[in-house]
Length: 518
Ligand code: BG6
Image 1 (cartoon, rainbow, N blue to C red):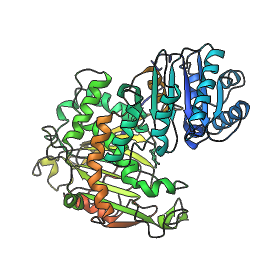
Image 2: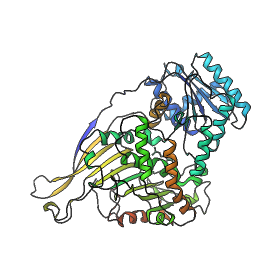
Image 3: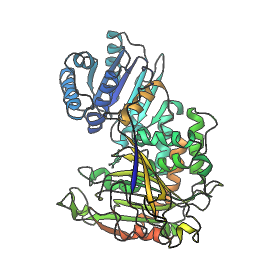
Image 4: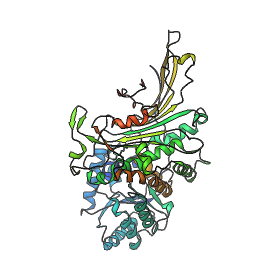
């Protein structure tokens, strides 16, 4: 196969500096804060996107002082930061970090937190503009929001916004309850529901690839596209998150949010304008057209799996049921594959295949658009060897895309070979998803956050599947850790005469019918 490569360098950012505000972070001692949020804030600061006037007030249960908190912030950035602490600037950055210990079940603590925030605002001459971030166990989301109101913390002079991590409920009913609680305090426009996949460079790029290139839009429909495949595979297992994952499983953890978000980005109609509500309106329409399965239909269209012991990177690993804090008879799925249909004029009849799982053979998030086959009796396809054109959008780990075309093998008369036109985003040290999303929220741009109607429609799709899993109407297939998931996931596509395209850099699995040389 011949490969033509185009590589682009870093494109200077066009972002505006965030407005002055106080960032109030609940869950400041947690993993997310350390791995993602502190490093993201520092990168924004170093990229001169944080305002001159800002403060971060960390909130958690543990009792320690500002100095200790600042040390924690420094070591988190040293360990996880894209940009490491710098001798001259770091001290100035971190002196804007403060800490307040709060028991979220104690209203009195919220009153004290309010005093602390006001004191910081006064000390740093900050306007009363507050960004609340809930990076904590979801069962506290509602309580915290209501306490923000009763303590008066949510009263501001300028703007206030609430960023909330997933999961947003565990089904439609609980999501509604949570939403009602949040709406007692915040307007929908003030609620920023994070789906970090929407902060990923190549997920945001889908829109641009589609709508800024005249060669794709005329083909972006059921006349030219045979199927769409979206994979998000992980090498890691459940790690130390069993207490959360046992109740969530891959369906709620990945499908309800990240996978459906990618489906929406691929399938949406061009928005009337490039503004946040117009874009989100189009995404919501995709979910409205997404075929909802009855319990019986789930059986034929959804596959669930759970990893058993296997080998990852040459090392033996345990099966899911042997992992710490996992029930020995757990039926939690660590893998889901599904065939989806979007019943509208553009997509009628085109299967969208999705798959996601833990402890799989490779870490990859990819979208493959498979174009229709040529007529079988054409000159170049006499022995049926001609492969389809593929557009592959690589979200992770190597950002980029490729277009697979057919061309004559040089020096032969009629041998046709696939050639791949490669575009790889070699932007080293490019901003992380959380940097983009935090900056958007600071600026009041909610385009890449999930609106309530998206969340509720996503649950309406997922709930019957969860129910079918719960009642065991869908078998729980096993797959060895380090594989590409259960055989049933391959059979799902084989039944339609299709096969999963191996992810970038991987060889086709033996069972894959149509081998792809990419
Ligand atoms: C999170 C899930 O939302 O996404 C995790 O809770 C998963 O289970 C993670 O590992 C995957 O994100 P990424 O960016 O590594 O693909």
